[in-house]
Image (cartoon, rainbow over all chains, first blue to last red; front, top):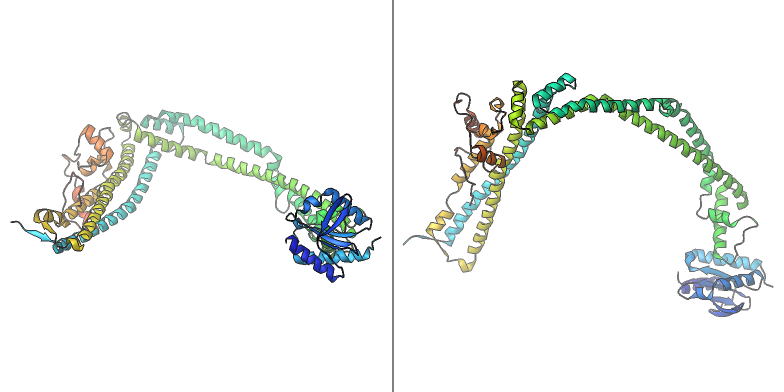
Length: 110
Length: 437
């Protein structure tokens, strides 16, 4: 599954759950700026489908990921991180997105 | 002005000749099959003759029998056999004794009897215990089980963030295992699984140790069986080996020397002559077949191919009016049937003469004796290397001279060949390779 297809499926699930998802949105994480594949700026919920093709690994390096996870841990945002290397098929990706959004619903942001 | 032949006559004569060549090839193929069938029987006879000779030379391995064999053949290395045999007997006996003193072999029934052996019983008990753990281990047999335990899933130590895919994969895997185990949560699965896993590990280790013990014991049983069989067959093995060596020595050694030794026992000498003659028959029949069947067939095929090429050539319109001088035409298309007939007659007569020969008592155990001359009364056999060599060095000898009252082999063989499928009537000795073209 390539980035376009993964992003399309995730966008569908996020929109179905009531999120207003915009593509390729810039976000500041620590001292770095990253670009998320999907992001609802009002609800501060989004996703990133990490692929080699899009050059995501340079952008989402260990420092950025640690900082992003710290932000999620502090309740500043919620971002679903999916790596293409994890070998997802469509049904599982949709199910993961639905479960993630259910978790988000249980964890209001500060 | 001499007569010439036209193309129509050429094609007609070629057709007739082709028919005769094809028939000759068919006869050659029949002779080939017959030879290979008959040589199979002769090979068996040769082996049996060797066995009979070996047994006559050395009936047993006693010292007296060995001395007699040495006296008859001059094969002195045979005297060493006894020492070698006793050394092997001592070695095998020591192996048997060592194994029989080894508790792993001595108590084999006690240890490894399938139902009552202590090792067998222990293995069965451990396998039963392992079987009780199987349901738990099978229920937890999931590709993600190790990851779940490592990450502390189901415990406060689980730290995988819900924004990561592995969080959901862990979740699904754990749900599946919990359902299979019929538990309320993964936390309940963990202690039951780890107990079963650890117990199974200990059982496997013990089972592996016991299996090695059984395997080692069985290897000793196998070693004991081999040593016992070696002891039981010791004398017969040495005897057969010695008999083969004696026969080989006798057939290959200088006959001037062994001939004098064999004179002590004419019956043994007769068996030696039979063995030698039977081997010679095989060699002669192979040589005869090669020269008179294989070479003949190869030459006939070459001639046939040439004939076919010429036929194709003169069937072309541009050659329609070719003329052939009578001398070369008639020479080429002379009726070959009589020549073929003579060829097969000679072949069959010689073959049968050798094949049916059984007058082994006419042989002599000397260097300048040639079975070919005794069997064929000096026919040409120059195409057989050993015959060629012998005739070159010793000349040809007709061993039937002065013994006409006993020698009617050729006549008998000629009569026998009349029954063969290959039809023939005349006999004529030939000294040159038959040219079928």
